[in-house]
Image 1 (tube, one colour):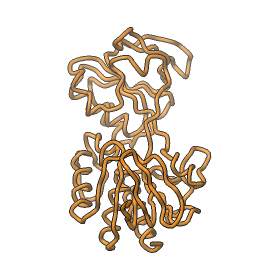
Image 2 (tube, rainbow, N blue to C red):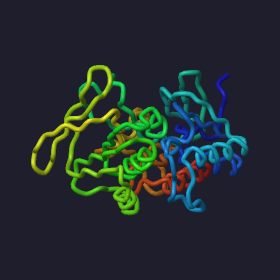
Image 3 (cartoon, rainbow, N blue to C red):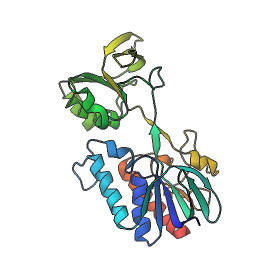
Image 4 (spheres, rainbow, N blue to C red):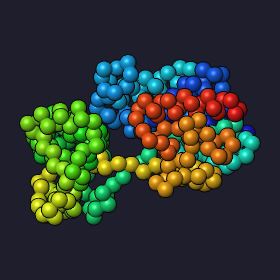
Length: 300
């Protein structure tokens, strides 16, 4: 017989883990399903400095604290990929390992990394999406970071402690990262910020040796030697399950759920970065998790 849970949460990032904590504290049975690794993308952040209560903490430690708290409260946490959710009462959640019944479902799958879409991106050694994971492989070498947001600048600052030189390439004239990060980057002697610069091509046969870059201001094309390219160019929402349930999404693919985190499909809630909203931060993800959990408890 397929096991029943009051609430099944899809996604093990800050939103999903916070939802598990709140739902368990409300006395509901909880199953949290995560495809890759608990903690979500924040787990790979070298340093988090904007989470209340911590002047600085690594993303991995913060993720571990959230996981441990949810586990200690009795939430069941499984590394399984959700393949399908069938609407009904109860709902049926099918994974690559089995199936579960749920009184309510919280979609908190977050976002997947966007790529540059360049030839060679999928097979050249030296292409990375995680500075913390791969930065040590390029110690003492010249590397590049593509992107202009907080993740790109945080990655660049982390890499500057390991690599000979780091170049940050951003296609827009202004960086979107917090000003404090931009100023810190500008203060590093071995870190160069190149706004209005796009990566046009990857050079090398088996391993990356350099980049072809183009000025978006003048159109000039040049060559930049680089042993690695760390990509931090944004994300796309993981809203496929929502679509299959008939949950509406906006033009960018984010789930159309309001501040109450409820979707138009009864018993289905959305939390975290996958939800359509103006601000996507660690704190707002946790807030969504709390709101979605309490809404799901009230429903079920």
